Image: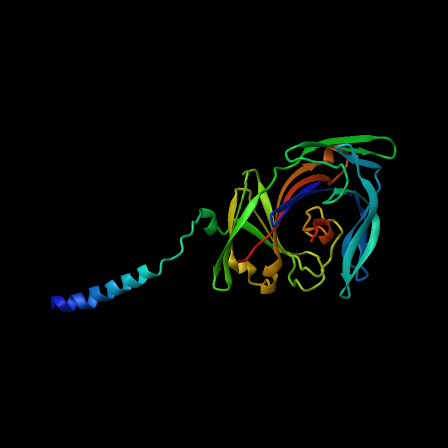
Length: 75
Length: 229
């Protein structure tokens, strides 16, 4: 009866433990902010990136001029 | 006023852009299909930032109509820039006070002083789950003095026109882990030319000087390419 108990409970546990140890999970630092749903506000800027959108001519954020022309950087 | 720092492959450069707009809200501009696309910009005299006089140029509003890109001139805007390769002597430093002087046509002079924000530096770390983005960790030199904007954009090589995809606003505390589901609607092709722009902004009201709904914005911007290995 004792051997049966060992076979039923401990052997699956042992192999389960071996399997778990052979595939370590990547370690990630998790901060409280990661799980906070109010950590950021989200705004979709271009619902369909393939479409031409409107542009009021103001680029004070430099969003549309991320990189200068190739000739300027010798590319 | 914007100081833009751009980082690409071992190369960092800085650009400065100064814009001035005096919109008349009584003069709205509409597209042919009656959509409000902006307001007429007024000529209010001479505008200078740190003794550099801004140039009066056409205020062009671009808009789409029937699937094509059009533009219209709607008054005046003030502009001055120093881009890479430019010989302009326009200089601005981070964390520096700058003067704004407006001399109106009648000779009345309006002055204001403002300070530019701190420089930004950042790195990203991408976690993948197979071919899917699990999350993107962004770390930057946070100063805990307010909010910071992040804009992910796509810059195709062929057209060179940057397409802003989405914006996040979060505390300027130095790190955020952006969940992968925000990137699901972005075509996989875009990963080749995906850029992240961080914007730290300070804002000051111009109202005390006699202009309603007027503001001075000073931006510190960092743009760099998000690299997928």
